[in-house]
Amino acid sequence: AYYIYLEDGNDSTVYNSGRGIAEDTDGSLIITGYVRKGYGSSGLAADLWIAKTDSGGIPVWSTVVDNSVGENYIEEEGRDVVVMEDGYLVGGHQNPSSAYYNDGQSLLAWFDKTTGAYMEARSQVTPDQVTIDHIERVDGNTGLLIVGGSPDNVLQGAGSPAIRLYYTDNSATINFPDNDPNDGNWLISWTAESTASFGHWAAEAHDGNYLAAGSNGNQSFVAKTDGLPEMTESEWEVTFPDWGANVNRYYNRILCGTPTDDNGYLLGAEIRESIG
Image 1 (tube, helix red, strand yellow):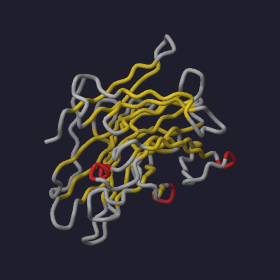
Image 2 (cartoon, rainbow, N blue to C red):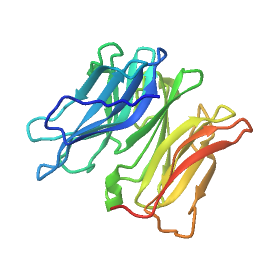
Image 3 (spheres, one colour):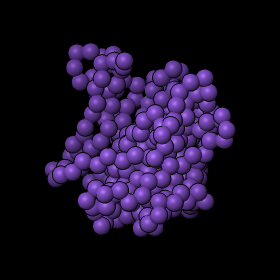
Image 4 (cartoon, helix red, strand yellow):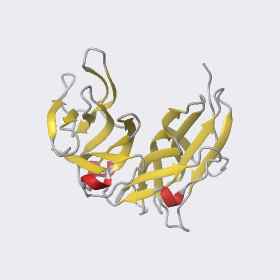
């Protein structure tokens, strides 16, 4: 075991946060998150951050993507990273305004494995107000499940609450909101029953179809799709209204999971009574 401490090299940084981690075939680690630059009247300022270490935890490179122009801050955050054959793919969100998550957009960013260079031409921002939280390679590493949900500001009543599960080929191109089977892109949404809905985890099911999990309001939620090529509705859905006596928890959400050998699924959830 070892402890890794990484810095972005910017003295003005308020703090760094790592949100996603992946291991490459050579044992190197790739970590993504954000660099928080400040708070104040101009809004929040954060840059997407990705770093790589070798198999022993020694830093190899660190990249910060800053798309802000002057005082026009752009909020960018990496939530998850996946190792592809031709680069590292980061999922997260980009907020083009100075107000926190007011008009957030899905962000899929590519980075060069050797240098850490941001491959802007391959990267994509979609206008769907969804924060991508998890990317999963499926179908023998020929496809990608990309799951996300409403931006955090829907807790204050803004945004369009829904859990969204995308399926794409390895180009990770979302032709939003097109579901044309000829372009390797599908989308299924679960409309929220309240003002907060998040997708945090997705995986290939035992029968080759797909799972998505997260939260719908204050209820943990997991669903199984009807599979390709349609992937238009759920084969089944399960909600867990509460894990205890208090039905008004601030958070009740599934964050991760894994299929089990007995054709079931082991799910990990977060329960939080309040924030603050």
